[in-house]
Image 1: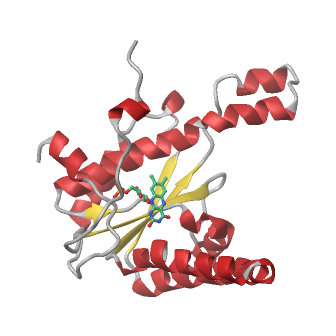
Image 2: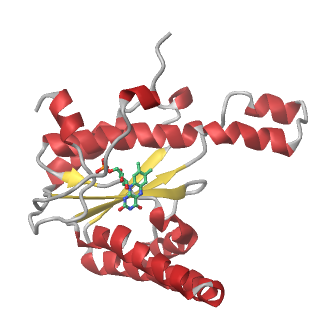
Length: 217
Ligand SMILES: Cc1cc2nc3c(=O)[nH]c(=O)nc-3n(C[C@H](O)[C@H](O)[C@H](O)COP(=O)(O)O)c2cc1C
């Protein structure tokens, strides 16, 4: 597929057929992430590829348990808002457990330029924190995941980047450690990416115009 076609064909896919994604294709998809650019060539990513259905169900249950914990507190202030949060998790998180493959993305920090200098020069923490607003570590993860997304499309699959589960990130890390012994020193869960053959009919929201997002001088 032409690169331009893959870029313009891409949509977030939230419904998948039962068709499998063979291991060889998953290797190609992860390999496309592996060669992505990263600040300081830090390659601060690690991919956990989950096919196990029971484990994916437990991931869904873990997020929903945390969701319920938060929603119960919200209910006390405004039950409608609590309900909305519950629906959000069902619509924008649980679908991922139905894909044949779920990639769980871990990352470690890629410290911004100036970080060590600020620390050495004893700049206030508030100034150090500001460096992380432009967080290069997370920009690296975005680059790797876009490579993977476009490669998946090229191979006939669809996917969706997901961060909405991250309010349960620590619980998920604990689950994966307890269930399969997975943990990686200094790494934390950042993103999930279901991959599978898309069902027809995915719809994407409209995009801003070029004029709104760009200035030429
Ligand atoms: C960093 C990031 C996080 C996202 N998290 C979620 C998510 O948790 N759940 C979900 O259903 N979609 C998620 N999306 C998909 C966006 O909702 C989607 O990209 C956006 O609505 C535009 O639609 P399109 O991807 O079909 O063009 C995420 C996308 C990005 C880039």
